[in-house]
Length: 365
Image (tube, rainbow, N blue to C red; front, side, top):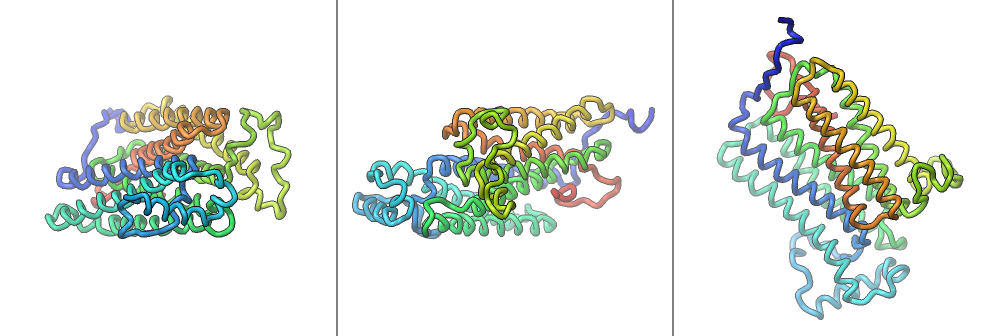
């Protein structure tokens, strides 16, 4: 029997049993980060992100607990450009609604910090965390701390003159959240699974698909930041045009790529189509292959299925002019699609026989 026809026998990393509690901990934090991404999408879609104009990272756990305190925070909001230029109609009851989502967004971020820090201390003191894991965990802790600062930096961009947050800062905020999510998943997978050597030849395709999905998600952040989903609500053409007639009205040309809503929406569509085509071609390769591990095949099929759902969500969100429910589902779908792509990359990363045991299975880039 040839090597290529040998039955697939999954193996476990050397320290899989000992690392399982750490893997489950990181997986749990990953679920919380995913929920944070969805909550962040709802916060953006309900235009709630500028309702809290104070940043109190240590003492801001409780919402206003009395009517005088509610009126105090409402008066702070009334001094913002968003209230003065957009929401002058808003009463304190309306304000409480948007305040809720931004408050939940911030408190959930702090809960993620606790969910990361407390188990880390317990596991470290009990000797359950291997030394090789500490650099990766330190990187995750640093990313989380930076993300909190980026969030406030983003909010501040809408508290000066323009009653909207910067689409550049929004894109950075989402990008870091997605980086934290995929790093958590990659690390957890590397603790309990060993990818199949036989499927390593698909790695380059998996890397390309992952990067395209990430670029599509970041392009979507620019769509959200410019409210570009509220124009050209037709598909596949944009009000009868392949390329919108106002694609390049701004000078210099490169500004259109980031600040022209028509161009930003077109670019997001184009990149999404290319991304979906890349995933479908990877699926075709997997279906045709005879030497692919079952778990790798499952990962690729899952990625293709999630990509199809995400495309359907994107089109539906556009045609319906971005209702909160579909918009939040679309943002959550982007995160799940990226997670599926990380799974595919992990399964196709392979490992040379006799290679030293590590905390993961290669680089995620």
